[in-house]
Amino acid sequence: MPIKNACLELLSRSGVSIKGKRAVVVGRSNIVGLPASLLLLKADATVTIVHSQTSQSETERIIREADIVIAAAGQAKMVAS
Image (tube, rainbow, N blue to C red; front, side, top):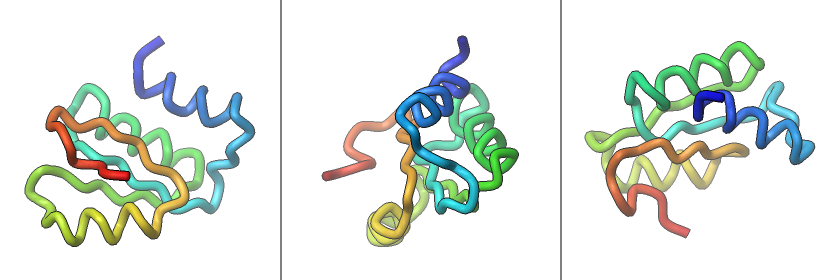
């Protein structure tokens, strides 16, 4: 199962409803980030993508406001606790 599908399967099996939620995908790769974003959109989430060129302060703000965060970046420390 591709990783993008695995992310949504994990949410589903954990009982997390996607519809109407604010989701952020950290990373925009053609392999994980963009496909995961499209799957979230098809599941009726409002999706924001942040990446290495998004300012750190903007990334932090968007992540704080999100209901769902998918970390799909090929760069370390883009998501902090």
